[in-house]
Amino acid sequence: MNTMGSWIKQLSGMMTQNRYTDGLSERDPAKIAYIRRLQKALKQKDHLSIPFSDLPVTVFDIETTGFYPQKGDTVLSIGALKVRGTHVLEHETFYSLIKTEQPPSDEVQKITHLSHEELIKAPSPEEVLHAFFHFAGKDTLVAHHAGHEAKFMQHMMWSLFKTRFEHRILDTSFLTKLIKPMEKLTTLEECCTHYGIDLTNRHHAYHDAVMAAKIWSQCIPKVEKQGFSCLKDVYSHLASVR
Image (tube, rainbow, N blue to C red; front, side, top):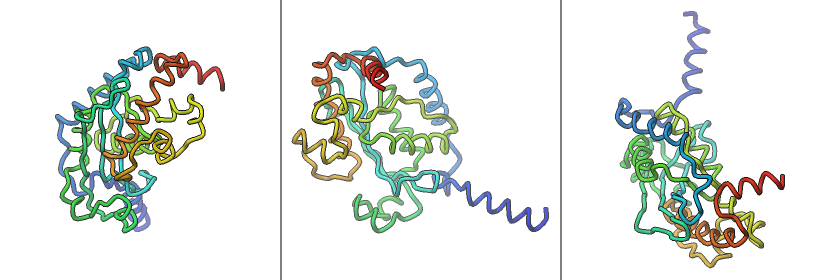
């Protein structure tokens, strides 16, 4: 290979570097197989017609080093808990830090209260994601500003397991946009203040997930009162007003 070709190959390798696999051991075939089976099963899972009172939901939140996984930003922690109808199941919870070799910026460490010393000792991304999906199972996932979570989950699933992220993931605004005067509320702080939800420990993945779960559970009876009994009803309404 000539000098120019060699340089291009090296540059390409730098550009496609995957921080989730840097320094990690070989992928665990059993974990890969489980994740792939679960994602395949989710393609056949129909949550659209399940009444909100019975809908199995896992509300989750992540803390990250930034907003752009394709540019090297990574997930530092995941927190989650179960919700069934209006019941927030605070005894069914999940929380884990995620190992990172690259120290987060001082700003990120200040916001999240996560230090590089504890992050470097945390379980690997593969272990944490596998454990998280064992916890969530086939539940519908919910998050506040879910587009952020979706981007990172899609990136992690492909980076670690070479499979697509098939979970249905809903933003809390899926319901809040149907409720007056909540349709104009945007931030987690605004929504929590509206419902009198405690904002202590903001920017901690688990506690933010608890806040989002309480918002979701508060919204359920309000949308049911408006005649929306399941996800299908909401999707049909949203399609009709576009």
